[in-house]
Amino acid sequence: MRAGKRLWAVLVCAGALGAALAAAAQTESDETPTGLSIVWHVAGRRLEPGVTASTLNAYSPDGRYVAILDSLRVRVLDAKTGKAARDFRLDPSSVSPFSLAISSHATVALGLMGNVEVFAAGADPVRYWCVGSCGALAAVAFSPDERYLAYQGTRGLPEWRNGLGGVISVVDLARGVPVDLEAVASIPQVTFSSDGRSFYAMSVTEIDDRDTFGVRVWSTADWRLTRSLAGSKRTLRRVAPLAGVPYAGVTMNEGNIEAHDLATDRLLWSVPLVPPEADGGGAASANLDLVEIAPNGRFVLSYEAPTAYDATGRAKGTLVIRNAADGSVEALYDAPRVSDVTIAPDSATFVYSTATGRTYTAVARVPL
Image (cartoon, rainbow, N blue to C red; front, top):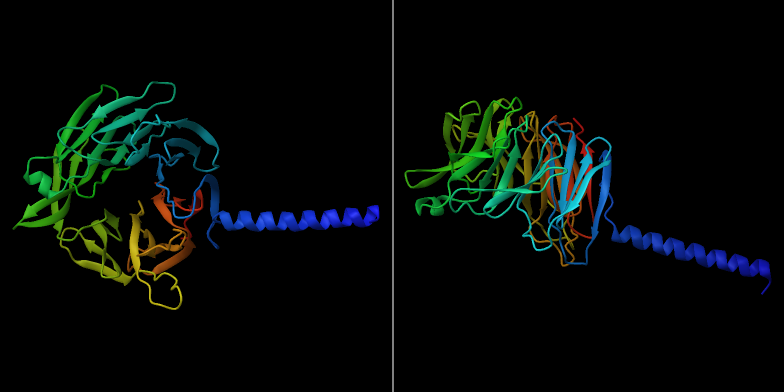
C-alpha cells in the first residue's frame, strides 16, 4: 500500500472511531432538555444501568450560591457563573443526609437523623441535635441574616399521639442556643420570610379524628406564635403563597395536580399531569415526583414522570412550569430522571439534578 493511501486509510479509521466514541459518549450522557435555557451545568457521576442517584441542591437566601450534595460530596457554586466557591467531602461512614441548606456566606447545613451538621468555611463542623425522637430532618433552612438555622423532622400523627416528635428546632448560631417550637410534620417544610421577621412551618393537627394539614407562623423577634392555621384535610406536598392566596398547597389527586386554599380547602385549580411517552403504544400514567412553588407566587415547577420507570431507570419525565392562576402549562421540557428541583429566591432561575446515566446538575432560566 502506498504511503498516501495508508495515511488516508488511517485517517478514515480514526474518523470512524472518533464518530463511534462520540456517539457512545452522547448515548451515555444525558443532554440538557431541548429548548431549556441553561445558565450553566456541571457533571455528576456515571452510573450503571438500573442505578439511580439521590442528589440534593439548594439556593442561598440571597440567591448568590447554589449548593449540590451528591454521594457525600458537597459543592458550592456561584449561581450566576457556576464557578466553584467550596468543594468538600463528608466522612465516608456518614449516613446520607436528608436535607441541605446554604447560607449567604457559603456555610452549609445538612439535615441528618436526629441532628443537623453545619460546615462553615475554615472551621470544624458543628452538630446540633433536635429534641426528642424527631426522626429524619428532611427540612433545614438559614434565616436571611444567617443568625438562625431551623430544622424539622418527619413525624406524623401516629408518632405525635404516642408522644414522639412534634418539635421544630431553631438555633441562634451566634450563641448556639436552641429554641424549640411545637409543630408536627409528616412532610416537613421550614421557611423564613424574605425580611427574616417571620418563620413558618408545616404542621399536622387532629380535628374530629382526621389529619389536617396546616401551617404555623412565628415572629423571629420573640418566637411568639402569630398564627396557627389548621387547613386542608389533604396531604399537601408544598405550602406557600400562590396567585394571591396567602397559604396555598399543591398536591396530586387521581392523575391531576391540584392547588387548594389552605385556610378553606377550596380548590383553586386541578389539571391533568403531563402523560409520559407511551412504550409500545400502551397507555401510561404519570406521577407527581417533585413540586415547588415559586417564591414570587407566579408559577409552580414540577417534575412529572412515569409511575414505573424502565429497567435502566432512564425513562424520561417532564419538567413542567405552570401558571399559578389556573395551572395551565407555560413550558415543559423532557428530562431524564430528576432527583431534585429548587427555585431561586428571585424566581428567575431554578436548579435541577438528574439521577441516571451520566448525571448532571443545571441552573436554568424560567421563561416567564
